[in-house]
Image (tube, rainbow, N blue to C red):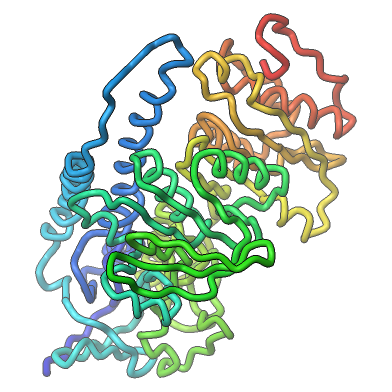
Amino acid sequence: MQSREVDVAIIGAGTAGMSAYRSALEHTQNVLLIESGVYGTTCARVGCMPSKLLIAAAEISHQIDQAGQFGIELTGKAVNGNKVLQRVKFERDRFVGFVEEAVESWPTEHKLIGKAKFLSAHELQVDDHTKVIAKRIVVAAGSRPAVPPPWYALEDRLLVNDDVFAWDSLPESVAVVGTGVIGMEISQALSRLGVRTHLFGVGNQFGPISDPVINSEAKKFLEGELELSGDASVEAVSRTDTGIEITYKENDELKTASFDYLLAATGRRSNLDSLNLQAAGITLNERGIPKFSLATGQIEDTAIFIAGDVSNAHPLLHEAADDGRIAGDNAGRFPDIKARPRRAPLSVVFTDPQIALAGARHAELVEAGTNFAVGEASFEDQGRSRVIGKNKGRIRVYGEQGSGLFLGAEMVGPAAEHIGHLLSWSVQHRLTVQQMLDSPFYHPVIEEGVRTALRYLSRELRMGPVPVERCLDCGPGA
């Protein structure tokens, strides 16, 4: 058993932990980064990057299927699952390699492999080989897939998203349980690659969407592409000789279906439960999460800080990086803690059409009792969207009554990953709806659909005239 004394100890070398490490180094070189597994962030190894590689292949396959609407006739298309997954893994490993190279370049004395547990507010036990005494500690231990315990009886027929990216070939069929971001993205991608896919959800709730109109749009495009049971309860699962059988109740009717695999996309669970944080004198709520400041990362009034999805507050890479920067900086400068402003909220789901949420969500505005108005536009007849054959979806924008301040938006539609950025920037810079309308809109572009929604919002805010579309040859969404 060895002992180490450091100024800052960081638990977890994912996106948040690596960001915290860099920030802490600006204040002290006596930093220790503790990692219990392999280096390489969740995003690069089993999350956003490999999933987008799979989605990219699925989109190419879908585009070939849709070529007929442009008068292009193609025959003999075949999806080579082996080659699809070869590219996914090759590019994934390349992204992971960049992360590993960065960590390898750090001083050896700054790194320690092992699983950390709190002994006190300033002491950590790492496996059975090291006791770490730290003046300040950053907890960035990440999260793991949450799977109902009875499902483990499926053994190798039970998957989480990590397992998909270890495949060498595509299966014939998959049941995906969970209509969150992971469930929607992977189920649509697999379906477009020729895998018989059935997506199960509860309450017809899709991803982070809170606006009921946008949620209905998401349901419409999903059920148009794959088997969807958006409001079903899984009663039982069992392993068979050839795969799995799932029994579920839908519309008060009990049904059964068979698949090769069951993919559990039922959310993620914080790894805090394995750290024995109570030994540090920290109080946890009913979800096992401590009270902490989003602006500083500080847990209660202690020298312990938290960052990344271990807190369940920001399960997004860019937010985790910000968390780590804030927590690492404050751990390094402690007790001179500084509050840092957060960026405007932005979420993107890489389905097709894409989903984006920027600024305040519809449900948040309603819950807060905000006096706001809504403007909306459909992409079905929007000029540029029809030109490229991507005319699906709808956008809803929110503005504050009285001030005309733009508050946020939710949308499902083409180019949402780009439009979401523009709208989140507008929220962060506190633009009014009129200032946004005074900004340039090129023609013909999908963003003209945003302008249409903003015009209707301006009218609802009683700050503008009844919208009149200026491009008579481009459709009502131009």
